[in-house]
Length: 186
Image 1 (cartoon, helix red, strand yellow):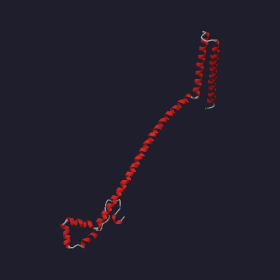
Image 2 (tube, one colour):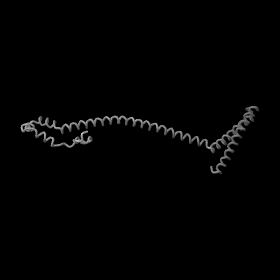
Image 3 (cartoon, helix red, strand yellow):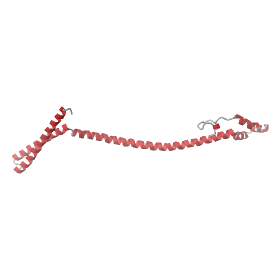
Image 4 (cartoon, rainbow, N blue to C red):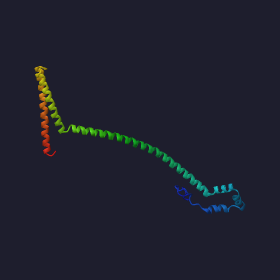
């Protein structure tokens, strides 16, 4: 770019030489000068033909081309920005979905942890042992009231009593182990 045109980012034309314009005027005759003063079209044509005006037009053309290039780059970046923004929105929605699933799974894990906590397992074993014992007593009552025969009684009653004792044993054994762990600082 011509240094006399000024900065490409400037809105003002570069330095202009009044000497060049004066030199052009000095070459004109008096009647030509009077014609310039009398006829605005001739004055406009004369001013337009000055090298400084050509340089100013050139600078305007360059600035217009730069503006057009900047506008095109802005449009390209605008579409790139829109794509990035849309991708970010999708990622945020995905993040929110994953966060919700994570929170749900965390709650489910906590429920499972509580359910499978050794103390809760022991309690469940002891409760099931009591229930099995009650069921075995019902079987005995049914036998005493002659609702079931001896073979059915022996099969069902022995099965329930074994189940009761196993559950009670496992619950008590787990309780003893938990007490040992508690004493050891766990």
